[in-house]
Length: 130
Image 1 (tube, one colour):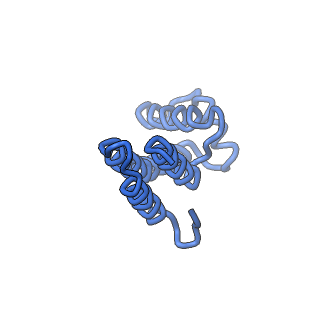
Image 2 (image 1 turned 45 degrees about the horizontal axis):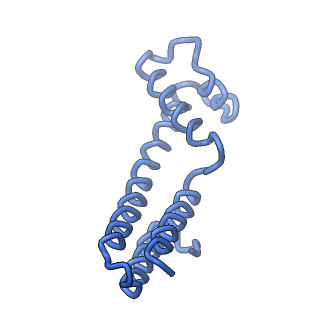
Image 3 (image 1 turned 90 degrees about the horizontal axis):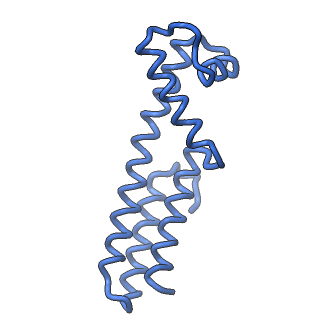
């Protein structure tokens, strides 16, 4: 193992934590961002028609009206911002700690990696296994 290996492992664990909360497939992050942007625009425009495509699609999928649909999208965005920021803080903090180590300090690198794993696991429900 090298320091870079531990950095990669932290990224992988952070990615797995993200995947617990959001779908990480090609194009999905853009979909999430567009839905949130369109929901914000709908609220700002008092749900004026025609409604944006992603809002129409979400309304059809969920059987909700525009205000409920937009409120749900924005609530999900707020929840993701909170958990996503926590995941990113752990990832960045522990990667910076490893980057500050001497190249041969693999014992401390492993300890830092295990701290990151523990911190990320604490963000998951008790049924989650890392």
